[in-house]
Image (cartoon, rainbow, N blue to C red; front, side, top):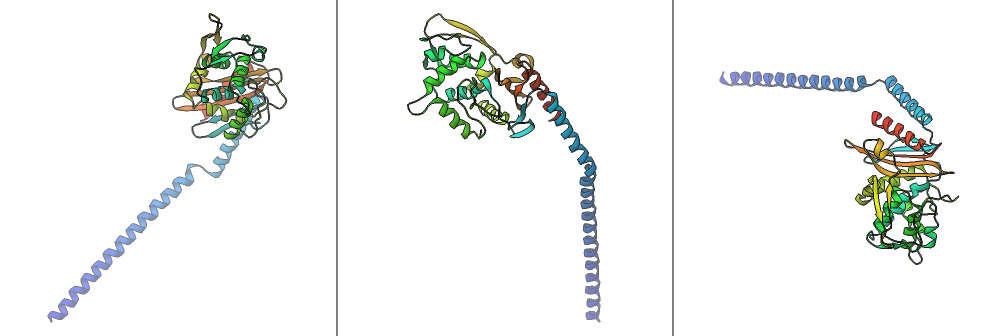
Length: 310
């Protein structure tokens, strides 16, 4: 009798355990199913394929309108932090970079580590257009760089290139070697100042690469953000000049902190611009803007557009 009662009790316990297990498993499966279904619904209802297509069409239309709104033949807007291209118009078309070339001249001079050295001015440097330098003048390299990047002095670029050339390795070779190192695969330099030469060319994308690289250098940023500077000669003593930065956006657009203007009759208006504010950084390059001043208008439009969209 006792044995029979023991068997009944064990059987009842097993039944209770079985019922509890089945109930628990069913609840978990039901909850998991509801949770997964909710996630699926959340994903699928966040944006429909039709909405996604409409949004994409709107973005393409916006890009097209912006491309038509600017006068520049080539342009690009880049987020240098995330290395993302936000806008481009003929960004790989070969154009003449004009004085944006001087970004390369400046960064190579900085990286030479000779900013305190005294640079002589040759006859060739004094013969360059738009210069106030005379043969026999001597200036500290850092002062030549202020002349180079603020007032876009062409003679300063020639003097620097001559000083930094070494036997068997010209400064132009160094410029092209650096360009290749930076991935500027559609660029070829012939002059240190960007004066026109048929085989001196670049692209908006390559100039953006160069500008982004240069702006990582603290000394370079110091030069290009300076609005004005009194530059004094080492020799002839007493000779000096007041340089004012040709980049008008330093005064007119909050957040702009560089980088370089450019213009020739063939290249037309060019401008590389750096913007930094509230944790957002942008590099904008416009090339072959229809008139000299349009490069600033084009850049403002692109900055306004990029800030609103991104």
